[in-house]
Amino acid sequence: MPISSKTQVFCVLGHPIGHSLSPAMQNAALAEMGVDGVYVAFDVHPDALGAAVAGLRALGVVGVNCTIPHKEALLSLVDALSDDAACIGAVNTLELREGRCTGHNTDAPGFLAALRAEGFDPSGCKAVVLGAGGASRAVIVALARCGAEVQIVNRTHDRAQALAEQLNGRLGSTSIEAVCREPAALGSALRNADLLVNTTSVGMAPEVDRMPAIPVEALHSKLFVYDLIYNPLETRLLRTARECGARGQHGAGMLAHQGALALQLWTGIAAPVAHMEQVILKTLSAREQELRASLDNG
Ligand code: ATR
View 1: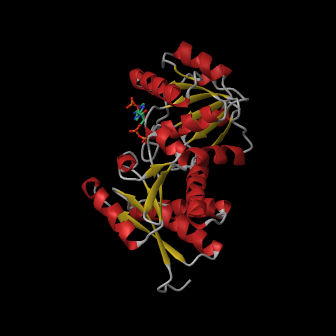
View 2: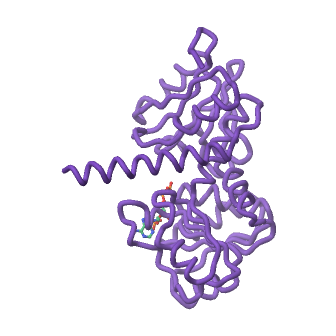
View 3: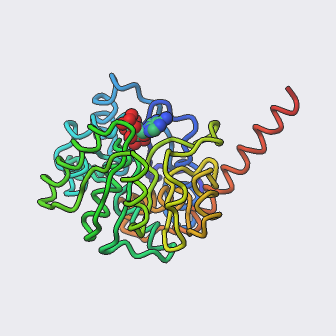
């Protein structure tokens, strides 16, 4: 679509931002949706985040995505927060309309949509979540909101315990608890679980031979394993789970769904999520080929 004076600008703010898949995915979606818009990436240093948001407001930009390290800092830069963003304590999407800036979090509903797209219904399930960082918060809030019982396992146990207490307090629930990493306790949690979610970076490229410390013998055929990592598409955790008869899925679906939900908020039009996921997979594969070629040549 040719750029004109009517073309709307959407963007993502991050630092660094060079490897973001959002421009490829969101521009493909805008084209498919027939929206006269363009989506660009801005590398914004944390010290300049306030100025960047003020500038976007002044320019009349309606739709902004935000990624590491800005998701928490934005909480104090918006005029209003969605329930999910307030509860999770992180903003990944801004909607700027009529001088008002609202912070949303589409990671939580994006995660649930990705699970449902794989035929897994998380309502009332028993889930074990590995990790207690930023990504984990969105996953836990999403699961707890649909009636799941959540057990958090983290390298730093105190962090898991503090997170469980904080999120139970915010949600008015008792369904979130911390479990220690010791094999007997974690093994028993996994044997009883319907869902295992990895929100840690363990197993992400280039450290593809690593996997989270779990008792592998506790994996079973009724377990669904969701790994938020999408590079590589099959982590060692997913491969091991598959070998144990469990079903599993990589995080490209969540990435596509959180982006599609943001586009929908900004444009009011349903976004082509399957197409967006295809673009993510193609872009990842092209990057891998480039990397291989440069290693072969160098
Ligand atoms: P994100 O926003 O991507 O979730 P984060 O907030 O830095 O990132 O959280 C990273 C999570 O991965 C944490 O739960 C971290 O465990 P700690 O709380 O003990 O730091 C976990 N993690 C990162 N590297 C890890 C490793 N090598 N082994 C086990 N857990 C790891």
